[in-house]
Length: 176
Image (cartoon, rainbow, N blue to C red; front, side, top):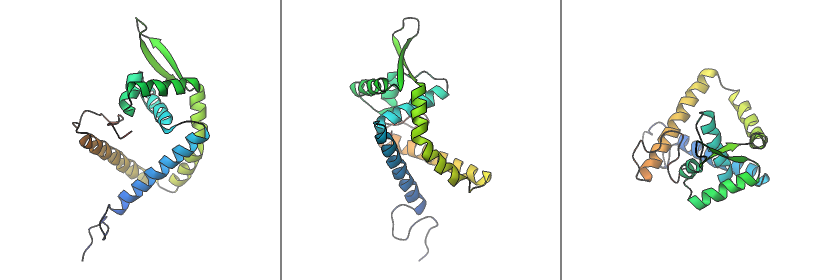
């Protein structure tokens, strides 16, 4: 019997999909361990990642952005922002002509703490990437980008959403 390339003989996901699943699991374990040592929940770290991503794009981050991207209720979003503010990681700033809109900004402490938490991961990943040529890394980058897009599309389908309801970089409910 001939095996389809990339498909296991016994059924189940192809070996590469299993590796991606294992990577996701280990990355989640790392986030839990790093966050736990710093009294931060995974949701706290995800929120900081959302704020950082939008800030890097020059976009305004509001509590509504966090609520939508992390699929949280309004009370849960408020509790999250309260925790991040109390820990010194986020500032609430009122902006706009009527100063009603609350914008969220990461503090220098958030960048410092985040750098310290993720330095070991960055160091080990950098060493692992050093074993590959720029061309190989370009292929892997394209592949991982495709896997992210496929995961977003599957999440949208699972949530009963249309393909354009969650542009790249935003999470479908249940996928954050």
